[in-house]
Length: 355
Image 1 (cartoon, rainbow, N blue to C red):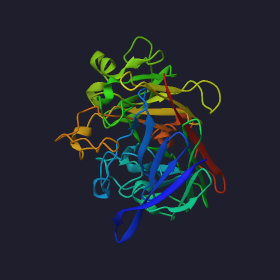
Image 2: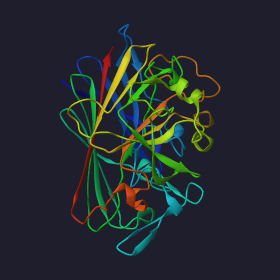
Image 3: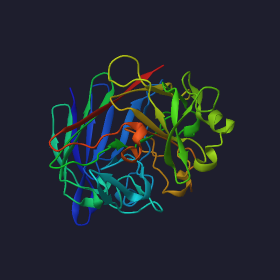
Image 4: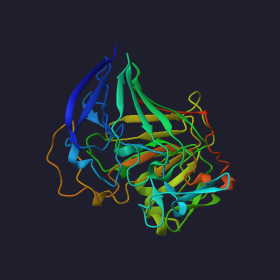
């Protein structure tokens, strides 16, 4: 049985922001704000049966507002950077808000991460709805969008996206949660072991824009097919890290789908918690929190221990399941616009277990 608890989290622009907490019979729980569909907490029992929060979050709303880490938020209309903040559909060029140098990042100045969603409670989760008007942040078409969060008795979180537009447009949605499976940041995020079924990554140019070419992971620090401690991978280094500082790359998944083997596995030797990720998406953008020492200090939600003065670098790893970033501008990636009336539909599942 899944229980749902709703509580006032704060107010933003004079409107109430609520936190919804989903919990199963095992004590596994997920908390989500109606602001940005933001995940504030995923609480999982560790190998000692102690409940630990395994995502980076805050207990105060103000820490989420305007936070450049986008932690926990739903990202849209597009994820990642759009080169020169522009793209063309059917010969017409659309100009977006430049909020990352000359590029547009994570939907622009006020993307989905900053919107208040309408919430419908389900028997096992939440359906959050937002209508993005034609021209919002420069994007064409009115888009009816919903994100559905559900949990199951096997300690899985399902995140499903659905959208329909009234004209041709471009969508690429993700969630921007940072995971630290040691729980409540007991250990730094780079102590985790990350495994990804990906033979290639996207090469990045200055400004973190994909060049359209792949880099084969074999023989490089990007070879995570058998698993690697994140800190060891960062220490190995790569010429790409001169641009990104550490991992901040699209990994091209070898397979998509919710059945069969997981595309990604993350493990904390400290807590024993393992997360298996399954997705219908083609890409996992992995960002190891290379600049998290520049954002407000995260809260230890479960244990309420005293916070440090500053976040450690690499304190969590963002796993952004999505299509190719800037794919609309990169013909090699085979990304197509969303047609009028076509249903955009994607889903990612995070399953938590002890190993």
